[in-house]
Amino acid sequence: MADPHAHDDYVRGSMEISEQKSTYDLFMALSKYGSLAIVALLTFLTIGFMYDGSLLVGFGAAIVLLVAGVFFLRSPKKAH
Image (cartoon, rainbow, N blue to C red; front, side, top):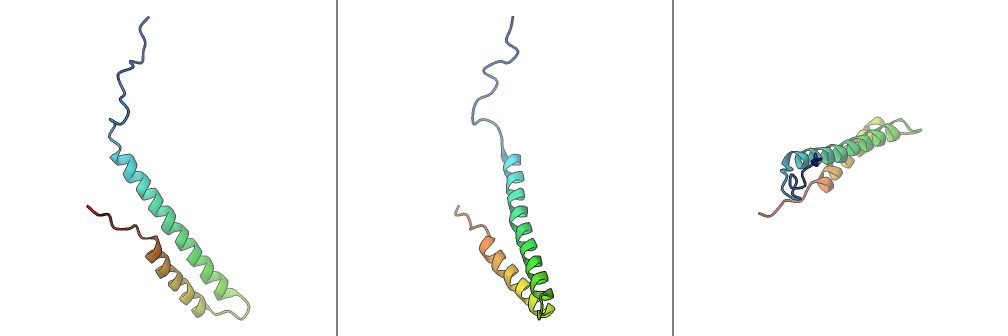
């Protein structure tokens, strides 16, 4: 009986993976910046609504955290 799976159909490393790579890169970017947004929101809510806290100070802290987070989470430029 013939083997239904020919052994020469797949050659390791020959498959085009650009779509999978771009999907993975998008997922990683959304995970990084989504986590940063959640942390900034929690910082704002914590500082803004704590006892003797201020919404203005909480908003400022969240903005500083967002700016620093975006600066540090950027992908390094690729040399071509």
